[in-house]
Length: 172
Image 1 (tube, rainbow, N blue to C red):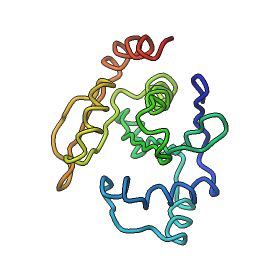
Image 2: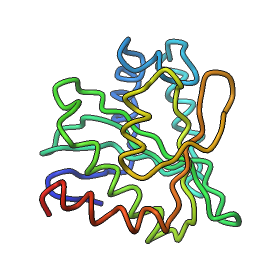
Image 3: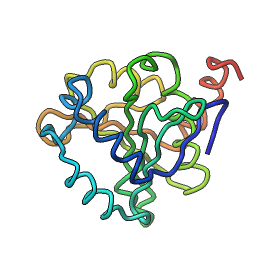
């Protein structure tokens, strides 16, 4: 999947090891549900247990450089729902708009390819930047998750309305 120079490449074991480094960083780890430092063995075990029927993990590449991770997980085809998440691990690409390209890619995949009705996001209630970002994509607050996290919801209908606005902002 790609938009512009941004590509989403199915997560490989090599990229999963790079993701572990980003995920363990002090910039990303505090915003995650699991906040412990992840070992190489834990990451390898997690990667080996991924189920493509319920999870789609992608490395975000910009000009052949891995810069982040984006995913759909908890995919429930019977309910036509999933959860989405992302982070840009390379600091020099944070705040550049790359996340919007990656998000449009994964949301197009969710709503057009997988034919889902709803995508949820679980966001740390202290991560105001991520909450604002998700709202800019059309997500709305939909309640509480476990302690310290909010649940956000994006419906297919809202996304399809918001998509053209986002493409215009991105210059397409």
